[in-house]
Length: 419
Image (cartoon, rainbow, N blue to C red; front, side):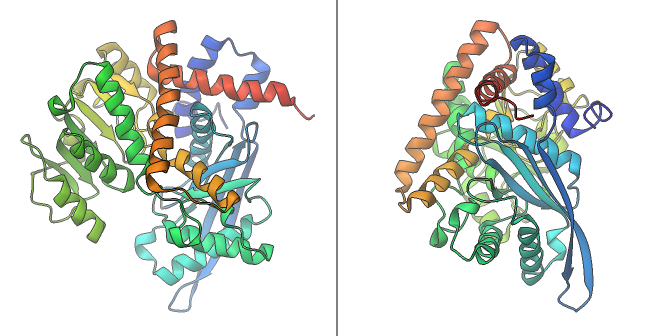
């Protein structure tokens, strides 16, 4: 699979990035073979009953990519475009994301090919419980720990946890993260990915001698990551000039009222009706005037069609895989700095790790402590990454993969291969 689809697939893009770093690490063929194949790919049918009485069948996936550093870790997404290739790429990325911030997790990812917009809450619950039941034997606090992703929520995690707990005949909050606070969730988890994007962006801006009040910021995508990133950028003095969601883009060169957009999105789960900026397309938003661009939507948003038109000096990847390898090379030539997804959006999995730890201890931290630990974890590892950039004269993405691959390889070599 990895060779046949390499030029066109999401997983192929991920492998391309991996190979660049592996070459610099002089990784041998045997280790490359192990690291470019998932440990386990699970595909199954999810029959469920519609509220009206009829039955339908969706397809569910869980890919557990690597366990060298610990249990699998990765979200579950509900989306019509979910495929095995996409889920495998995301599980692959999670392996490096956990390693680059030095978490004791491997990589995993899951999904259901469905459109949640066409499903009632009761139908979503039935799908989630059947999905969880199919995975009972292969997930768990010491096996694989799912989390929310695109179109899944703390409520979905609550249903998953309850289903697993019922099968285990004991309360097992550590089987998933991203849960509601009342049943073992962590304070600070909802904002964590957007907060991480902002922490790293501000640190790199300081490294570039760019003051927050001089930075115009554009955020593509106003879901959980984008909306909190935009809010935190504005609170730190940056001028957020562009935002977008599925309804389109909104741009105001004088700065948007982020607080108003945030409240609208929180209440209606959409920016529809926002009147604080000129309406533009998502495509126009990505190439609009700004210093900092945060693609926080879906994969392959920055590509050969628009890379040469991007005006930002700094790109911080809030989404997974928003930049194709070809676009990445264009940015490198133009001198645009890209903080890659496996580092930039690792705030979510970092606080998921904190939640897992708290569940296992049965002792929960204050939000200020969570945020302080998050910033420390991200910056310690980001500064390690910057050292690699300066030492090897490579882009940030290559440096991130070099650190992550080296950490996984060390674990594999110490454990050995059971054959």
